[in-house]
Image (cartoon, rainbow, N blue to C red; front, side, top):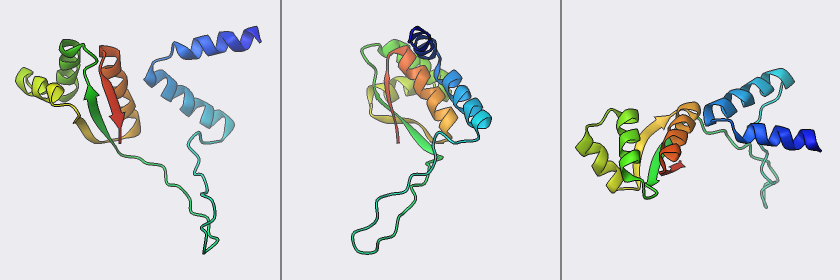
Length: 124
């Protein structure tokens, strides 16, 4: 059990990008997918199972600044390339999209950066 606790501690220290890389490495090593399609329960009338599609485009929505508005504005500027006034307006107008149509890795990276700055993010 002590070894498992050590592994949990090590995994808890990973950044979002490192965790994504780890997931890809494990998928390749074991020949499985962490996001395998899941079959839905049979429909009441038809008895057919529908496969759930994995989403590949995400909108990164800033939901709040977590009381750290200045840090979040700085991070939004770095991510989006917006000027100070536009970034401030985006943060103050939350919930607002920071990035639309981002791939999963990019969306997770942006989410990690905003959360590290103190903000809250939702992926849709």
